[in-house]
Length: 196
Image 1: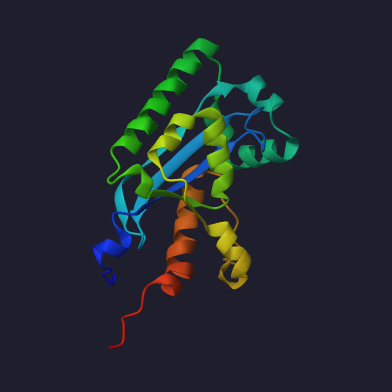
Image 2 (image 1 turned 45 degrees about the horizontal axis):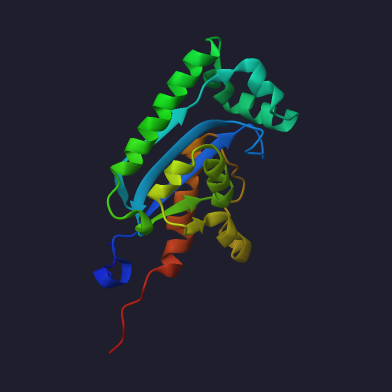
């Protein structure tokens, strides 16, 4: 059972677990290939439904912006078969713009004030940097605060799941971050009853 914390201590804080798959490390020279997010309360309980969008791109454009490591990673995950499109660039841009509008609408439906919506994930600063470069208006829907699970793993390395790697698919990776938070860190962070 989830312990109850007085409302004045947590407000309506939620965590938006988010992950992006991209063509590399440079948001100015690359592309976002996939976006996924879902929201929870601070105890990890789901709020609403997740959103996941795969963005299409011309095959040659995507290959030109990836090194071999990233190319093989996304080929292995199956993502690139969903990303590559033979349509003309205008049609691709229209479809992708519609997907970003769907993401914006998803954020707009989240409960609470934007300043109480904190981004969560592994290396979430990287995803935030990409959103700042490519879709900065989305960041108006969230706080500047972030819950970076990978940073927590630096100080508590024994919490790392042995033998597991990220799937390199946005929703699966966001879910893995959430699972690590709820299973490994949340039990350490939950407030203990006050002794009187």
